[in-house]
Image 1 (cartoon, rainbow, N blue to C red):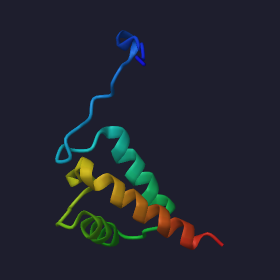
Image 2: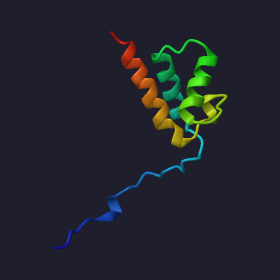
Image 3: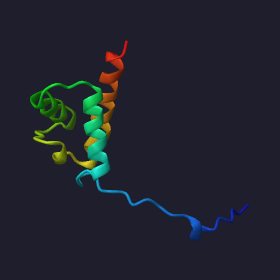
Image 4: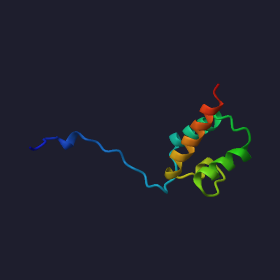
Length: 84
């Protein structure tokens, strides 16, 4: 059995390396998630980002592609916990 698939029509997404910086759209996603989670102070935000990344983070722009999933998952969980 052979499967005929025309691969000329398939477009693969370019995958960024885990250590590459976040794209602008991803930075906006993190900012929105921080807002939705009601993280009040910049110090609290830096602490949360550093904890999720497992290393010191001074701003959202210091996050890498590999940090995005854990950060967003934690913020979504925190947002759900605050919703009555």
